[in-house]
Image (cartoon, rainbow, N blue to C red):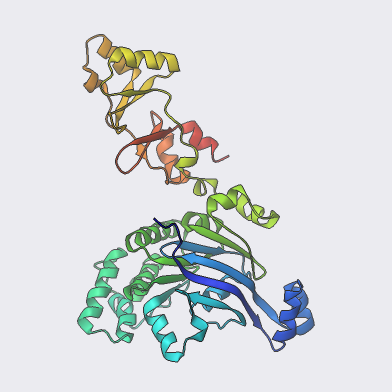
Length: 394
């Protein structure tokens, strides 16, 4: 089986300059000059400077940076809303810079869609009309437009609102309409330019979860722009940090947090919520007291005594979690007051390895026992204690 990555977008040495004297300005930049020096000497603004990265199909790639870092210019180059000054952009191995007018129109209609911060909805159309718009432009039949649009409206949780005016919707609902419209065309790639930054924190968190859910269902490639490190680390499979038109580092959230490229990246990361960087797999432990459901109470009591704990995790012969045997219940079994099976607590709090620690905080705070970490088939992989959750955030 090949481990070769399926690269859908490859950006090679992309630069974008604004101004009349681009050639000498570009030479200055190649020689290592700062963009401020170029602006002073030639009156040229360097928005993007020699940016290269790859985007894997079905993944979320996040570009993060402060205002003016060049991240939004990069994403606008990917559908040629902005034409690069130099460099190349390969989509499925072919340069989009070589597309003729008709091919570019087809690329925008079928391969790529964009979601803006300002929603970009049409006030004279209802929700259904907005979502169906791109399909109409493509020349789809009215019945097909409405069916596909309704599918997307339902997916983003707006069923029942399809005939409402845009003015009747909240900010979060409008953004859902924008996402539904972008998805209705069934594009390969979704470009999202700070789509949630205008939303209040609670709605923003809901929309982040919505995006992850949609991406998991549809396996879309997403290129996401943000200035929020927490949002970047929550959403991104890979994250690229930009400064002054350049990419400083590209890595996974975990890799970037562990090995920042320089002080700038480190300062950026220090402002992040560590609970949204690290997941359960980074803090889980092997349970010190593990027994099989076929073991008796004497063995269970001996294991608890030897390990200095007051409960044992019970598994079947295939290491699937059965439950927890508390010490007080084990004592009742020994006294003949309970059967061994009835003594096992089946209502056990569980989680999975890829869950972010921040999502466990409220659960861990009230957990009587360490949380069991299981896989999709209910195999016990480890446990997470309340202390390990809290200490990981320091």
